[in-house]
Image 1 (cartoon, rainbow, N blue to C red):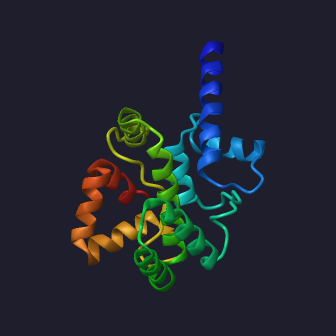
Image 2 (cartoon, rainbow, N blue to C red):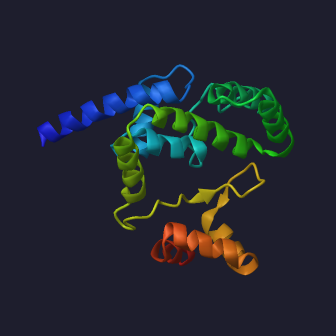
Amino acid sequence: MIYETKTRDQRNAEAWEAILRTFPMDNPGEAHFKMLVEYCQGELSVERVSRFFADPPQGWNLPLISLDKRRQQLVKEIIELETQYRMSDHQLRQNKIKYESTYSLAQLRARLVEILLKRNWAEKTPDQIRAGLKELRNEDTKYPGYPRLLSTIVKPGQIFATDTREYLLELARTDVHTFKRFTRLYGVDQINDILNQR
């Protein structure tokens, strides 16, 4: 048991280094580390932490340099990161206009997290990426093979999160196509369990 704890602590320390390189936290310290370990249920990984930053659970406050800045600063950072992807000046200008005019704050956060995660994955081998995806999809033993739905979700075009159950009920009434897509992505059992919550 002691050996397992040491091994897990070592894995968490290595993951923490990767997380610090991937996500620009504001003065990261032990409190940040402990909060993320708790969120990841004892096993840190870049993939799990990316989910935290893309959709922070209600009541969890983890200050980030990039993700907590106002819209224009987020757009600027996203464009700066995209310049590393061999995009033309024309494409970068079009992206900037798109981000400024149509992206909500939540969508900008999600886009930034997506770019940072891709940059981290670019340093990995295909086998490491597959292992990370497999871990992400199988981390919830109650619904093996499916990613876990959080208790809140940010609806397209919205800034604030809404209750996942309410959103699914709304989809079932108004957008059956999207509801079926959620069912395929997250599994019938998980969707049913959320809908049956009181």
